[in-house]
Image (cartoon, rainbow, N blue to C red):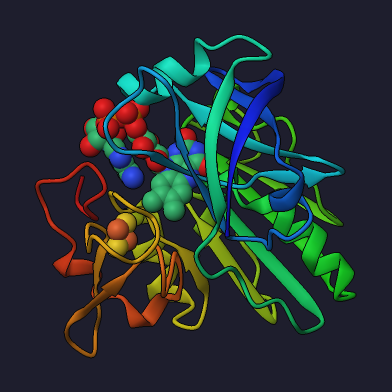
Amino acid sequence: MFLLDAPITRRRQVARGMFVLGLEAPEIASSVRAGQFVNLGWAGGPLLRRPFSVYRADGDHIEVVLKAVGAGTAQLLGMELGDRVSCLGPLGRGFELAGRSAVLVSGGLGVAPMPLVVRDARTSGMEVTWVHGARTAAELCAEAEGDTLIWATDDGSQGFHGTAVAAAPDGDVVVACGPNRMLAAVAERWPHAQVAVETYMGCGTGVCLGCAVPLRRGGYDRACKEGPVYHAADIDWSALPSHLAYAVGA
Ligand SMILES: Cc1cc2nc3c(=O)[nH]c(=O)nc-3n(C[C@H](O)[C@H](O)[C@H](O)COP(=O)(O)OP(=O)(O)OC[C@H]3O[C@@H](n4cnc5c(N)ncnc54)[C@H](O)[C@@H]3O)c2cc1C
Ligand code: FES
């Protein structure tokens, strides 16, 4: 784990309201695995750092992808190239990628860990099918890729008319990221799928217990340390707090 003072080096738009930010973070770029995340803080930012999956890593740079959903993400997207961000990572446990084929299922901002999944799956010699869904065509991330690429939209404006889960074929390994209600549907169809869950986070390093995830076997563990990647069947989806934005029923 590294704590770096990282300048913002790139910015591009990849869907309506969705932007990629590049950060110069060499130690993280060279060691990050698919599904791991960084916890970002900045001068004048929120009290708590904000977690973001690493989207891509090349050379000395990592990228994150985000939308403005609140004060912190709006501030990040308002920063200029050259502005500096405190970057803690890589954090958490990533995806295990082994087998002949990987099916990637992403909803909306759930694209975030997928380019690194494509990279790591290809390194393992796997054939990659990526099914990417969003509410409407304009919200689909333009950078989805794979040996096979399937689009899905809730309104039918591009690709399959329905959810990414419904559009997806089976594969040796299923990897999913998106709203927790989508991941709960993934758990129904593929109990052994690997899913990256959404929780609130504080420290990102296993200390504050702010990221508790309810488990089917009882008790909780820490999304930032034992997660954020879990086997879908291991999570008690119905016990995720119902008043929070990331609740299954939200
Ligand atoms: C491991 C992990 C990886 C993540 N990766 C990404 C990513 O790659 N790209 C991305 O855009 N977002 C990602 N998130 C979610 C992101 O961290 C939150 O959206 C962000 O912290 C919101 O900060 P804010 O100050 O803008 O919003 P706030 O003002 O804190 O909240 C705005 C709204 O977002 C909701 N919210 C806040 N935090 C979360 C959260 N962690 N999950 C779901 N809803 C939340 C709030 O309930 C509220 O409705 C990730 C979260 C985790 C736990
Ligand atoms: S965020 Fe602090 S323990 Fe997980």
